[in-house]
Length: 106
Length: 118
Image (cartoon, rainbow over all chains, first blue to last red):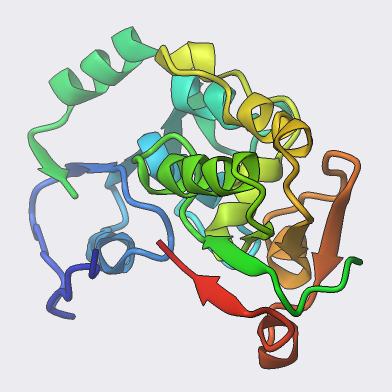
């Protein structure tokens, strides 16, 4: 199936701290749209295929990043996860969604 | 490496677990091999994450795909290749025995009768 082509215009959320829920791998255009939209105070939560970004040496992740532990375990990524990245379970994900005023699901 | 001139190469470039593309390609390869059709597998780009040790599919209520891959030899799959640049990019320095790290370039693909990227 052909991957969707996306606009290069980032989805900015100025003035609101945002939780970004990202489940696309680095090859997907939406992964790069998400990276472009991240602001300094935002939080990035990697889930599903996006967690392979933890092992991808070509990807620079923002300082406030976490990853869903079950998706890391499935892919053999829980050991030696990238420095500064927090692993969260489903409860932790729910707590994150409660903490942020605004959420974008990529 | 076997004589590849009569072999069909299936390329998996999707990471495991997120969708069904890779599994369908593997099923296709195993089915072809079971019917004595000469077939090989190539993991390219993000697809090399299929080869990462320590996977536990049960964490997401799925089967561990690397085990499916382990059945490939029993089905008579000719060869399993991995994109050497992608292995480095994703920090995979050790894979299952019998996986050949190769450059994913035109010269490599030209060795095969047919190349399919499902």
